[in-house]
Length: 481
Ligand SMILES: C[C@@H](CNC(N)=O)C(=O)O
Ligand SMILES: [Zn+2]
Ligand SMILES: [Zn+2]
Ligand SMILES: [Zn+2]
Image (tube, rainbow, N blue to C red; front, top):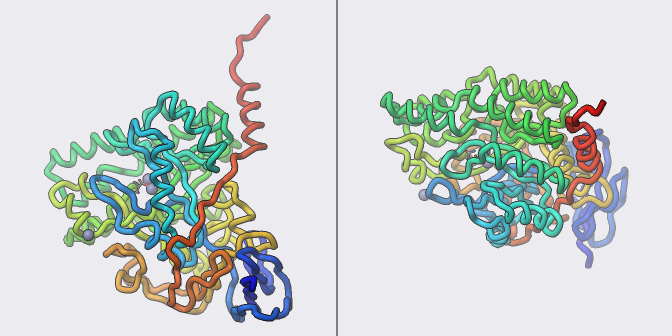
C-alpha cells in the first residue's frame, strides 16, 4: 500500500509566498499542493488547521560525531539528526574534515560510514586542510562522482586544520574550475594564536580569555581577505557563522560591488551575547566557548539587519556539542576548552521567536533563511526547501501560538548544556515529516536510526562557467601597441 499522507487545512508557506492549501504526499514525495485535495482511501491525515506548513528546515552547518581538540562531540549522526527532527530540521549539511595529509577521499569515506546511522537526510561540505596534487584530484572526484559542491576552509585553528593563503588560492581556483562553492571559517588564526599567548602571559586562563583572544577585528580581517581572494579569482564565496557587524559589513560592501558573496548566521549569534563568558561558574562560561565567540549585543542587531537586507542568507547552528567533562579539559587553560555549542533542535524556534514575532521577518522570509536559501546556494532546490509537487516530502507543521521553554532538561541532544537555557519561545513545531513519514508529533519523537539518505548536490553549471570565462576574459593582459 503506497504510503500516502494528506496534510489538510493549513497555510503553506514557501520562501516566495504563503497560501491556504492542502499537501498530498506519496512514497516520500510531494505530489500535490492545492485546496480541498480530498482524502484518499488508506491515507494518513494530519490536521493543519490554524498551523503553518513549511518546508523542513535545512541546517547547512553541523558537526555530528566530530573528532576535535582531543575528543569527539557528544551527538553522533543519529542523536544529532534526531534532535534536529524534533526542532523541524529535516536536512543537515555536515563537514568532512580531513587531518592535514589525510587523503580527502579516505576522510570522505570515513564520514560517509559514520553518517549511515542518520535519522534524517544529510550531505557534506568537504574541508580542504592541506594541499598537494592529490587534493586537486580528489576535489574533482568528490564533485563529479560524489555530489559534493562545496569545499570548506578554516582560516583559524593554527597548528591544526588552518589553511594558509597558498592553500586558499589553489583550492578556491580549483573550486571555480569544478563549479563548486568555496566556504570559509573566517578568523585570522595567526592573530588568534598570538592573542591567546598574550592572554595567558597576563595570567588570563579562564573562559573569559576566549572572546578576548578573538575580537571582531580578527574575524573581519579574514572575511575581507577571503572576499578579496575570491574577487581576484572570480569565484563566489560563502562565509560561515558570520558573528560580528564588521564581517557583515564586509560582505555588504562586496555585494554592493556586485561580487557573489554569501553569508551564514548562527541562531546562537543572533540571540546569545558574550556575558556568559564572565560567569564565575566554569561549566556555564566554558559551555559558551565556540568560535567565533558570542559577541556583545550590538552585533546581534547588525546580523538581523543583514538578514533583513539580504546580504546574509542562511541560518545554521554549528551544532558541535561537548559535555562539561570534555569542556573541563580547559579548566586551567581556555585554549584547551573544546570549541563548540549545540542548537540543532532550537534553531528554528529561537529564530521564529526573535525574528517573526518581533516583526523583523515575515513567515516567508523565515522559510528563506531557515531552509530555501541553503537549498538554493548548495544546489538542491526545489528538491529541498520548497513545498511543491515533485519535491521531497520534508515538511514541518508550525503552531505560531504555542510556547515552549528551552532547556537541557527537555532537549533531545545528548549534550549536557543548552546555550538557550530557560528561553521561552512562542512558535513551535507540532509535527515534522521526513521523506513523507511523520517522525515527530506533539513531543513524540519517532526518529528512525539509519532512515536518513546521503543527498548529492550537483556542481553548479551556468554562472560558474560564465564566471570562469569572465575571469579569464578580464585577466590583466599586456597591452599590445
Ligand atoms: C570546529 C567547528 C565547531 N566549533 C566551533 N565553531 O567553535 C567550527 O569552527 O566551525
Ligand atoms: Zn567554524
Ligand atoms: Zn563549524
Ligand atoms: Zn561526558
